[in-house]
Length: 312
Image (cartoon, rainbow, N blue to C red; front, top):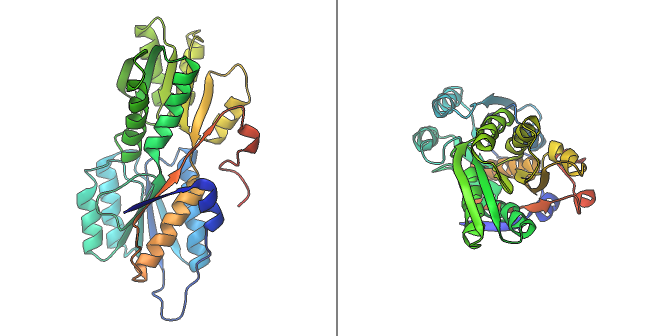
């Protein structure tokens, strides 16, 4: 089952968990994320660590980067199982193919908690409503173009979150007959370098582009860098994350990046850990999947936005 809540409501509702008499002791947690080089995942790890140490200050936490490699992440899960982890916090790099590794962990008695993206068979999941994030970022494009223009979608690794963002974006574009999608299948790897490389190719192939939807903020930043290198400035860019770098871009009137559907990685991952701990104690949640509502951040509302680096 799923429930949807706002980021603000979730942040206000975060509860400090402490071990109680008779509770199983939380000793070891393993965390596998898509890419440790992405500040988003640094924030998720901080959220997990802070909530976990409220439960047990001495808990052992191991964080590893899958580098968007399915085989690497599967091996990491097997290593976590062998190390006797109580909980595996998983940011799955593949929306479907990670299932056998998840099942091996569960068969070994390890609680698997998904965050940011879904993972087949995970005991609990907390993530942004990514379909809505894609809708909001691409509705901004449609509104800016008055419903007419040539656009591109820079895609990424096929995790559930990215698939959902693209689906939400395509839903909006399809509802506007004047929008022509020039490209939607180029994989920017969810990174600045990947966005740069894909955008360079798109700019070489297309003489005119009116707008770009990038599946996350690093991709958007890479796309903007490609445009500047090639002297192109006829289009706008939107993304997803609400990252610190995007906050800076939105302060610059000359930036091509104009909007981002924000997430709260710290709260998201921390809430997933809280739910996982409850599951570890034998308390099965009535709703095993929580969707957090994204907020569209632009220069107009940036002053009210409390981003990833806000004091917790």
